[in-house]
Amino acid sequence: MILLAVLEPNFTMAKTFDFSDWDDLLKKYVDSNKIDGTRLNTVNYKKLQNDPVFPKLIDDLKSYSPPHFQTLKEKLAFWINVYNVFAVKIVTENYPLKSIKDIGGLFKPVWKHNAGVVGRREYTLDEIEHKILRKMGEPRIHVAIVCASISCPDLVTDVFRPERLNEQLDTQMKNFLANPEKGMRVDADDKRLFLSSIFDWFNEDFESHGGVLKFIQPHVDPKYRQMLESSSLRVFYMEYNWKLNDSPL
Image 1 (tube, rainbow, N blue to C red):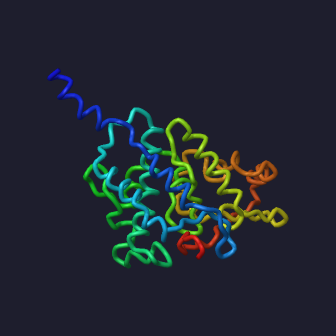
Image 2 (image 1 turned 135 degrees about the vertical axis):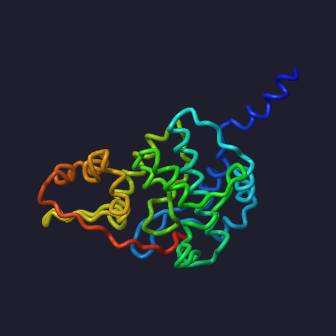
Image 3 (image 1 turned 120 degrees about the vertical axis):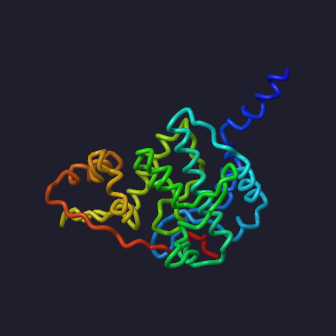
């Protein structure tokens, strides 16, 4: 009995975090819209910031100590969800605003501000993205983490789960590339390809997978796959719209 009493706290702390509250919030406050001619999922930050479930979720993360994850998928799913929660959190704390970038300054951009606490330790969005997620060698994280802006990949209405992560990331990549306003646009006649600036900023993350074009090939419309192999294809990057992905009034 004494042994069980000693081991019980450690077992509790090692449990997988329950993101069901986050899943419910996503389903309540994320909806499909169009802003500045771009199709995207928007977030109703005004209503979300007043929902008592959101601060409860934040408190639950504060007291949760991430375990030694058994699989890469468990670790990826956890930190992708945390990044998205904290990006929304930092917006709601400063709402209303026009862009998440308005929160930061020249010498300390928003990405380097303390965004939230996990297991009594503060994290920035920059640290989660660059020191944790990118270190795991999975380029599809770039279509899963959402920086609260129009040109970002869409914040989806399902939390990321280890058992479905591969399918979810593939779907995210496919849907992002299928959006001509912010993911990928093709001018087949002139052999010009327009991609999100995300693929330019994080080009090195795709190098070990054969490069950006080879990596995205299985995820694009089949009619464009052969064109991506053309040596005469010219690649351009779209201007990034940092306006907040806020639900229209």
